[in-house]
Length: 241
Image (cartoon, rainbow, N blue to C red; front, side):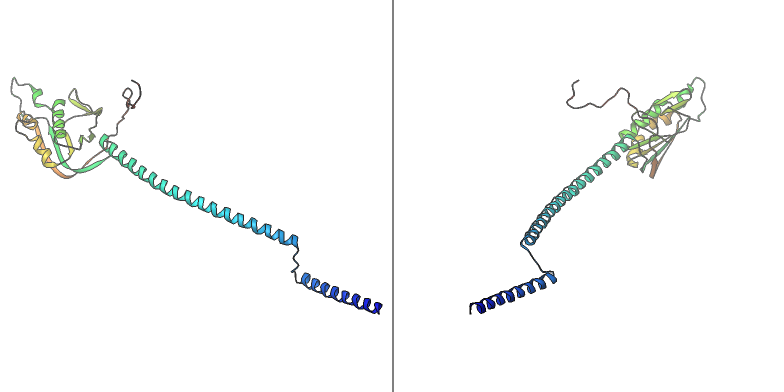
């Protein structure tokens, strides 16, 4: 009886083992075998991927912040550059280093053609540098924004002086006629020159030929000479003197 019972137990064990082995085989065959070590490996990989994802999110946020800062900085830089460009253009305009155009007047002066009487000084009937300087000063006082003399731009370093029978302007010699071009309010410029007892009255008294023409558009070229300062230097604020 005991032998029979043992046989039955062994048979049951064999059946159970057979079923377990069969299930194990099916699981392995279907690729679904999962061990504790495998689960731990997968869990570690998932945690690593989650960390990598979080790190990437932080990096994206950091890059977005940097991009926003760059765009803001670029906008401010572009604004600063535009301001500097405008300041430079204004500085060049004031210094006479750019061509300009606008309404104004053209003044032409020529030596007198009047016959000189005996005893009269012939120099009184010729145009001199001081005559041109008087015309220039009147134009400036009347609001001329740009002036040229015989196509030479008048700037802060321009000289107008007699050299024998000619006159030097920006180190270039010219003989009559002398042509001023001035940009500004045409009526104001003309009125300033034609003041009673003014520079034009004096010149015409000696027979100097004077022509004044208004123009809607006058082009005055830029100064093309050299502007170098050897001794004059900008004052630096706060520097010891």
